Image 1 (cartoon, helix red, strand yellow):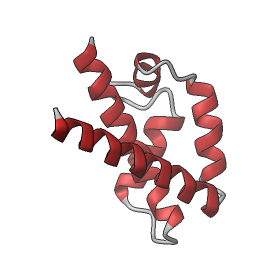
Image 2 (cartoon, one colour; image 1 turned 90 degrees about the vertical axis):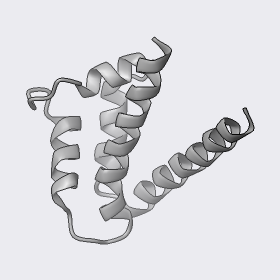
Image 3 (cartoon, rainbow, N blue to C red; image 1 turned 135 degrees about the horizontal axis):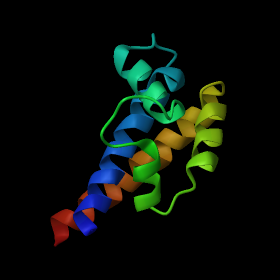
Image 4 (cartoon, rainbow, N blue to C red; image 1 turned 180 degrees about the horizontal axis):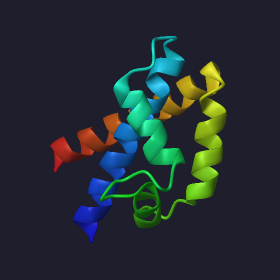
Length: 100
């Protein structure tokens, strides 16, 4: 289960980055953005690994996560804050992996 949890975290992290990075940087939305948006916000989007499954594995409420991400899609500052927090977590986890 620990492996699935790490996998779910990585998938969710990538989707959030693909969704918010163009917004935070005022760049054109790419195919990755479209895919991330549909994966997060469309429960019928065809995917083996669903957004809800990743959230459940990480004890995250998918509805709350969607609300926050939807808000960030219209708020450059919030998108940037989420990405910065995500980057800090990524840096911390990679440092502890290197120390082990």
